[in-house]
Image (cartoon, rainbow, N blue to C red; front, side, top):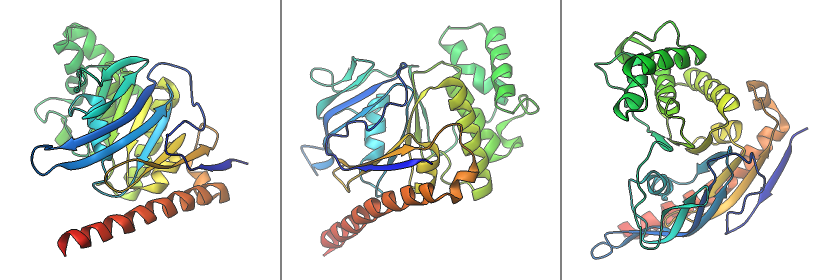
Length: 293
């Protein structure tokens, strides 16, 4: 029987280590203030968390709480105001270097699809290694076809994004990210607009990829069932400015399938996460009411 273990901690210290491989992320006392000379919006305030190499870490919290700000700081899209972020012990951003360098070791999959519509799925997947000079065009296409086949897309590799389902296109985006052999996969609500059936298929596909690669996954979502089903840990963030409110340690064995959705342990974990998120959602609503008053 899986054990549900709920930890309240401001530090975000890991309750368990999913793995000891590469891709460990250390976020230490990070603060992010947008437009400090103008509106002065604090998106993240003294936020810390440790993510083990090979862990699936799910980030949940109210809309606008600063989750994506953290992801963008890891990716190198946004600078940090103070604090530091490390990847495998190496400084990404921090004192003297507020903006992380962008690199193939951290790959982002966004909410909205980003496949080139004029390229086939195989050519989309092969694009990165060719542009980076890591593979020849022939080598990249061969690797792309191999990885698409492993992801269950062997029959559609030479089709365009507009000719396949949204689920297939999203799966191809994951493959495109993984062909670069990243240390970290950064996912910003990639399945938000999908219907329940397509989302369930995508969950299983992502778990298959994870079981095969053990890549570190930093995954932002509003779907608490998705968070518990996929994650090793679920980190609940406070309303803006973002800090770590609660860590839900998901001790459900892998590999996982949808039978666990009806289990008592799963429902308990979802309920605990929901209580923490609901508290912050109320605070966010009340803060909005005060701002409008």
